[in-house]
Image (cartoon, rainbow, N blue to C red; front, top):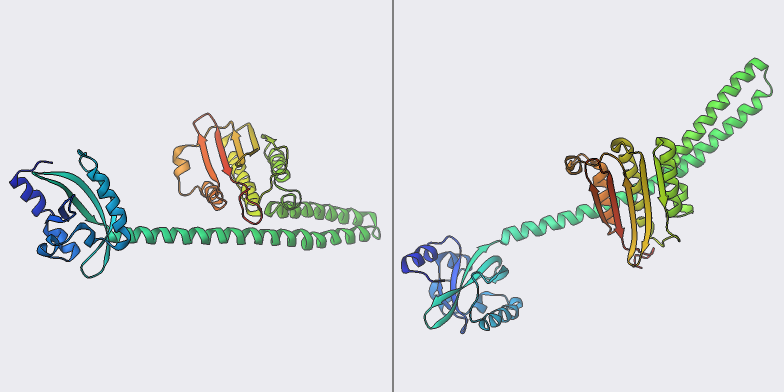
Amino acid sequence: MDLGKAEYELMFRQSPLPMWIHDLDTRRFIDINQAAQRELGYTRDELLQMTVYDIRPESEQKRLKQVLDSLQDQPKVPAFDLYGVWTYLTKDGRLIEMEVRTTALAIPGRSARMTIARNVTETSAADAALRDSEARYRALAQRLQTVREDERVELSRTIHDELGQSLTALKIELSVLSKRLDPASQERVEASAAAVDLIIQQVRNIATELRPGVLDHLGLVAALEWQAKEFTRRTGIVCHFAQPTEEPALASDQAVSLFRILQESLTNVARHAHATRVTVSLVLQNDGLRLLIEDDGIGLTEERRKDHRSLGLIGMEERARFIDARLSIESAAGLGTRVLVDLPIRTAAGVSA
């Protein structure tokens, strides 16, 4: 970079951004502008007696030496050959984060580099706080999801066992009572018994929707097959399930999450897709398991996919993230929708298979 004196004064001296020039051979400062002096807390005279190592914490000095040594081996370097975020040590002992850009500078008889910096300490702290907040949110959301599933299991069991048994007992009582009544009264009691039968079935349906017993007792493959058949029975839309040759050894949270993702996908198909056919495939792979859900519907618009009110899609993404799975949704107008979930298989102890 060749600079005239006027351009140098304007760009370097008056720049609001910290800038300095150092000798690549001696690593000593050649010049420092006022913005750099303010950021680092040193006077110009103090910095001219120092090297670039003196404004770096000990933890970064080895890394800096490696970078500067590599630059010495390059006779010609492009503009802004070195950039990134580095930690700097101020005169009063504070550590600050600076985003820097370094370029070769033409000074007769010297191998020099000019650095332009920007203090990003507050930005870095804000980013770290945001990442921490997101991690806390994820952990909380995952915990709430686990609690919700536990509550579903308990509620399903209570409804099926206690309420179901009470209704069954009521039906028996009505049957006994009917035998002791006149024909006209018997007809009314039998109608009541039929209504109780309907309620019993509704209770079983509710309990199954909360937590299908087949998932806990027979495994994921049987649960997905049952869900596909139930979807066809309720909607009339053909749903074909292609299952693996063997039951995958999944951790409980993985099995539940895959089942819920299928549930939500089929709900979306029933509500929005106008499809005539759905294919669900569960495929064992060398490095894990793949769940594929495809329909021949009208497709998913980009607007709806990005709509923050599409809680079903958001829930599917969160469930996939909780089990370290990759979820992708491919769709185009008139060409249907393809939901793909890839995940590593974990044992109950949490170790990848």
